[in-house]
Length: 94
View 1 (tube, rainbow, N blue to C red):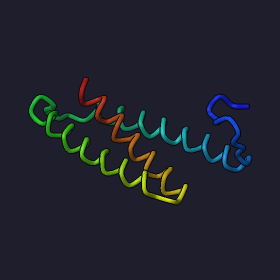
View 2 (cartoon, rainbow, N blue to C red):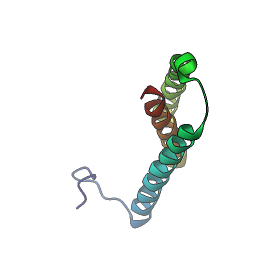
View 3 (tube, rainbow, N blue to C red):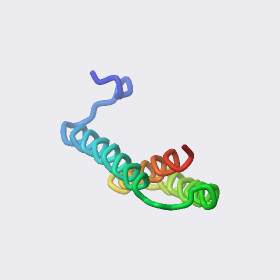
């Protein structure tokens, strides 16, 4: 039994494969975004706070959308979008 699974639930093999695939996409896109921001020549002292504010609003919207969706595919896509923005915000904040 996987430590990520809740007690009493069983997932199909396809669901587990999709979950692992989406986690890999999540981490890869987050890393690629952070790397891309490192190469971007931008004055973060001036626009950093505004960027964080806009990203926070978008992340809040994504969380609300993911809480009301009934589709697993949409939930995974929103999760990946949230991860990309999250990694972007962490990079900007540093």
